[in-house]
Length: 127
Image 1 (cartoon, rainbow, N blue to C red):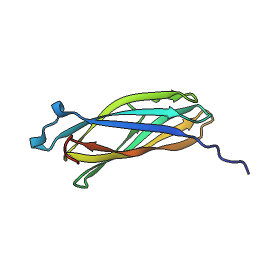
Image 2 (image 1 turned 45 degrees about the vertical axis):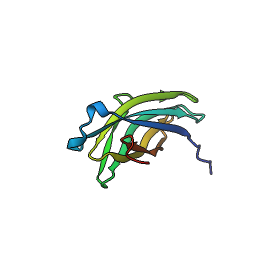
Image 3 (image 1 turned 180 degrees about the horizontal axis):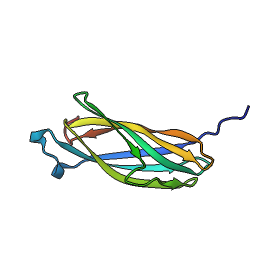
């Protein structure tokens, strides 16, 4: 029996509050996030799709799925990185995001890379 190869994809999120696009009086909070994806595997991989779970502090949850990220399906050689920026809105000043990227190797193997949960928070909301 052959051993299944291990694919290591490092995903580093970084979120910030966008005050100028938010309207706190209307419970409309806008957050930008930058994601850095690095292929730590020996194989070339391609990001095929994304699946996000976004939750606010009231427990409201939204799921977002789709092909690629920002209209791209980047191919990452071993050691190569890809970064992009995107955004989301919440109805509360605090929330979280987490999810997966579906990846594919050159031989067609599909696997999910876990996006670690990260915090979305208006400054000075959490101590």
